[in-house]
Length: 153
Image: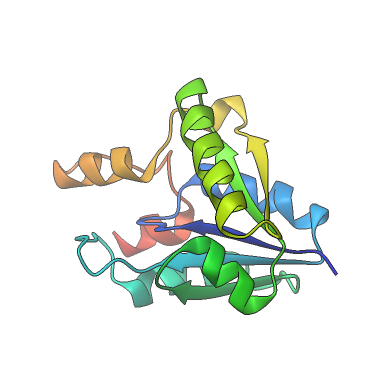
């Protein structure tokens, strides 16, 4: 059974994240969307709200599981029996960053591979940090996030 983890803060989940999840689902028997918890980081949305967003968006998807975790992603993968980390790539800079993380993860746990999906062009400009910045100044993010997030705003 191929089990993958798609890790992130998802603060908030964006249309880019949704696209990667939808395209990743057929590739694995189970896809775990894993919301990382970092006590030193300040989030816009609570952990509970981020869980709720993702679960409601993918409520009909039997192969998708949403969980939270702390610590190293590669250790979390080992703890749940996942053999792959799924990541989205928007740019060359993303690739360089993700390549380095994948190589480090391989050193830490050679049993976990990384798989990269290239962002669809219409989503390559979207990031959670940009969405948070727009929200901070009262801007409209309806073209960047799922309707469930827009409804909450």
